[in-house]
Image (tube, rainbow, N blue to C red; front, side, top):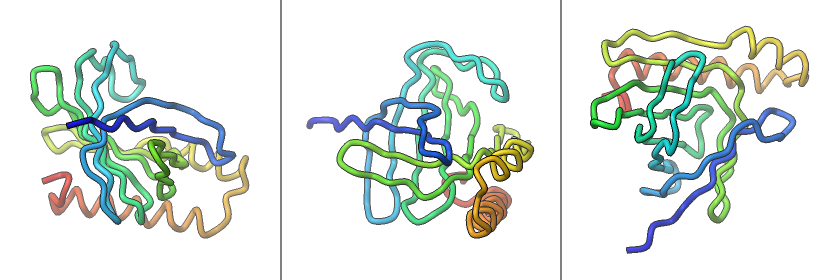
Length: 158
């Protein structure tokens, strides 16, 4: 069976690319796109620390929701953490998935500890890019929705 490689582009509000990577398409339906990625080199992340080469990332993109969720597993298969981006719903065309990252992130560790990150960056970019009120409201609603999903151990936090 042939695997489909997807290019993922995380974009700023002005549509400039902030990060890009490739993943394997696991499944896609009218609501949820599931991708599988593997870190091909060590990464140092300001909030997640050192991410080892071989770390696996299960990536969940809902086509009608204002967030995505990444579930990271260490190279030995153990759960590393979840990482959620508050973002606009993705555009998935052909083998490219684009989303506009709205900067607010949530990290959840295996022990259930969680932290909301980058609210200051969201506020700065909301001012710099002049986010319309509906963008701000959708981002705040998405943040509340994800926190409720975490509290209720709903997929993919189950």
